[in-house]
Image 1 (cartoon, rainbow, N blue to C red):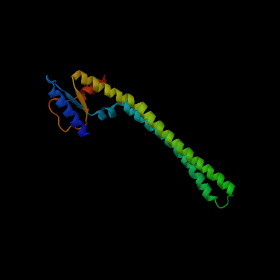
Image 2 (cartoon, rainbow, N blue to C red):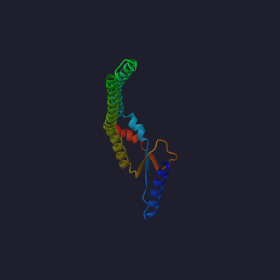
Image 3 (tube, one colour):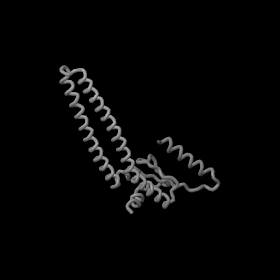
Image 4 (cartoon, rainbow, N blue to C red):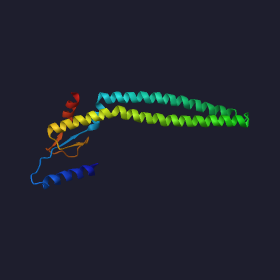
Length: 168
């Protein structure tokens, strides 16, 4: 991350000084994750995702309990079952394994889809606020960095301005 930051900063500095009329470069910085996690919409999204995951896990646990019970019964009656019944029980257990695996893959995919669906508008709102503030303040570049290592007078912390923009 630092290398990319330094390369971009070097490129901007070289580009700016190589032009005949030196343009003023204004750099802003913000911790985007701070805003995203603090937004009420993100908290609502995370709560919906937690509830959905809890529902999926309850169903998964129920399926796993049935599977474990079938295995227990199979092992308990293994000595008294005929080969045909053993084969039927083994097939049943294998089908349960496949069903559980398919269910788990589907619910994980659905959770990913829902996460993307619920969180994308939040990220877009924060991005739009950052862009609006940057344009208003005449910033050339805005870096997403929670802890800048060095900030000169020319760098602008736009945290408060973005918070005000999001509050509108």
